[in-house]
Image (tube, rainbow, N blue to C red; front, side):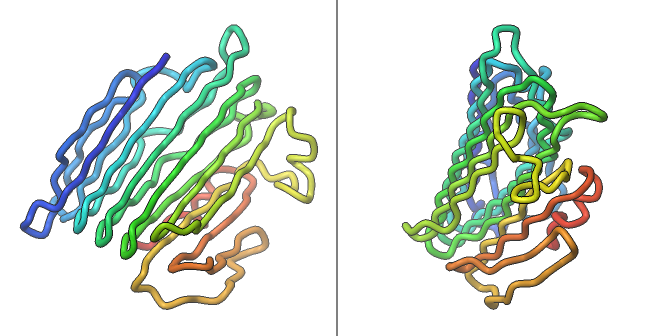
Amino acid sequence: MRALARIVAEADGRGGTRLARLRGEPPLQLRHTPDGSPVATVHLIGSAAGPLGGDDLRIEIEVGEGAVLCVRTVAASIALPGRDGSPSRVSVTAAVAGGGELRWLPEQLVAAAGCRHLAVSTVELAEGARLLWREELVCGRHDEQPGDAVISTSVGYGGAPLLRQSLAVGPGTPGWDGPAVLGGARATGSLLHVDPAATPGKPEVLGPTAVRMPLAGPATLLSATAPDAHQLRRHLEPRT
């Protein structure tokens, strides 16, 4: 299955944000869920199981100057194998103008046994843009080994690279659960916070398996591993 979802958020001139475009295709359904704040919140609703092997799903996001957009999902995504062994792919492309803000806060991705999944995210931030970007991966459902999953993220700020990171788990990646990668943890994730107005911080250890590090730019990256999704979220719940 191939599908495209597109979100365009613009300042409404009254201190809030309007959605100039909100378009989805099954299984990528979009719903505007206003809460009375200046932030435009959109929930992504999966209208079918998956992503399944063979799926190619794309999400495109554009945030204009002065607009604030928050994108969430209503449930975790479960990457499942296809009948012919084809890989599944979900790509997210986002551009945020100066003075704009994007909060990407989906629920977890679960790499089910037998899957072959690729998640690719590319974010371009103009000078003065703000970003909260959370990614969480759970290695298999309850009491099962995961399939193969690769999570790749690229973020640029003001025309320069800010973050490039990639993680591969599953039987096709030797040593993925060893001490050099997850150390036996079943869940892992990160929270990237980009804010030009924030005071640069210092490295901070948040727990035995969680750390917040400043990046070479107006940003910090919180990375963590945990035994399960619930404990991971304790580390990665943003303070906004």
